[in-house]
Image 1 (cartoon, one colour):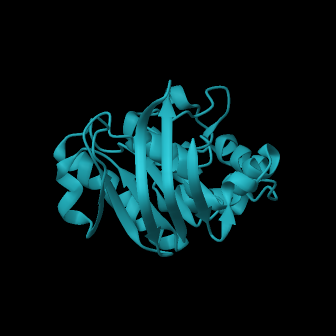
Image 2 (tube, rainbow, N blue to C red):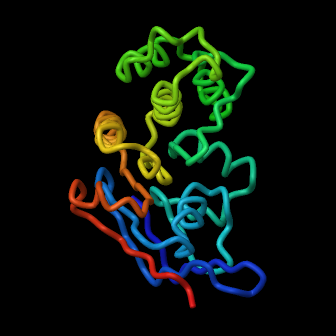
Length: 212
């Protein structure tokens, strides 16, 4: 599904991420572990095509991301990659329904209200379709962010620290949402976290070390 080779990223000439080789199959689920400063968020941003690595190769679904022009990369990301970041980044001036429709539009896909309603229903927030982000509880906003990430049926679902600020019950619930939605899309799931509570729930682990 994706392959990284000799990947490196640096800020001000100091390496913040180094991955010699990592290959992941379609539909698998991976937990990226590591202490603060080990490059977990940087790695997710590179996988999402948000950040261009300093060196190395990144291929997703057979596509070399570094070979894409910015507009092509945006289209590729919108159609094949779903992202749930630490900050949910819902557009405050748009309703829940329109936040998901915007994701379809930016990916160059047809506006599909039935698909939006289907995803919101599967995450038990269909009743909030006309609500604005500030009218949602944190749990509802998190579900909407997951819905937006999977509305285009991505092949890769990336999440950054989805559980670290949650109590045990909500941690289990958040992981369950991500796992079930990834399976529904047939997507590869990559969760980056230092939260040890979900380590036992995922059999595939990739551990990053803090850079010297």
